[in-house]
Length: 81
Image (tube, rainbow, N blue to C red):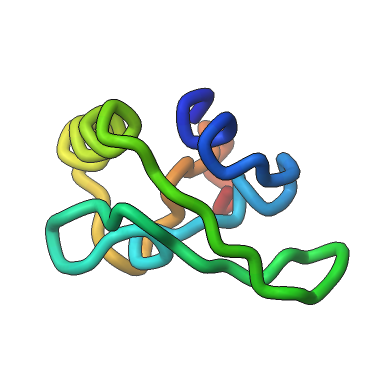
C-alpha cells in the first residue's frame, strides 16, 4: 500500500477505494493507471514503478484477490474497504 501511495500520490480515500481492476490488465499490474479522484471528480493518471508492480502482484496473489475485489480490503468484515 505504501509503495502504491508514493507512486500515485493519491489521497487515502482514493487509495483505499482502488479495486484490482483499476490497476491490472488481466493478471498483470499495468505500468500506468487512471482513476477518478473523489474530491475533484477529475481523472488522474499515474505511473506504477516496477518495484511497486512486483509488490502489488505478490499482494494480489497472497490475498487471492479477483478483479472486482478492493485492492486493500478491510480487516473489519462489515466494511468492504
